[in-house]
Image 1: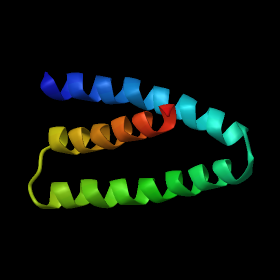
Image 2 (image 1 turned 180 degrees about the vertical axis):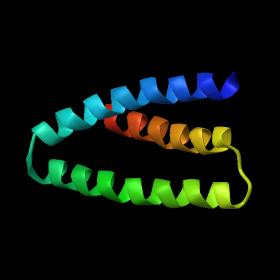
Image 3 (image 1 turned 90 degrees about the vertical axis):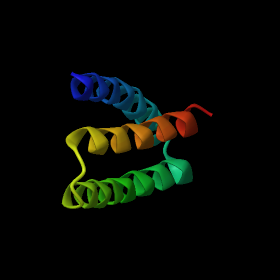
Image 4 (image 1 turned 180 degrees about the horizontal axis):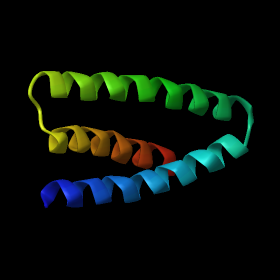
Length: 80
């Protein structure tokens, strides 16, 4: 049950981050280029982190918590 709640919270927060990122990308220019580059790099880092967690015996909930932590950090950064 906790995994379902954590996943739902991560999904909702990710929707907010996607909206904020789209607004930033729509603005164009250097800020948009930096955001696009950051976004792509973060995907690879998140995948490696998740794979490492699973390889070391971590749970699905631990993987989702890690994703959620990164999503919340992006939300805080993008709202500024």
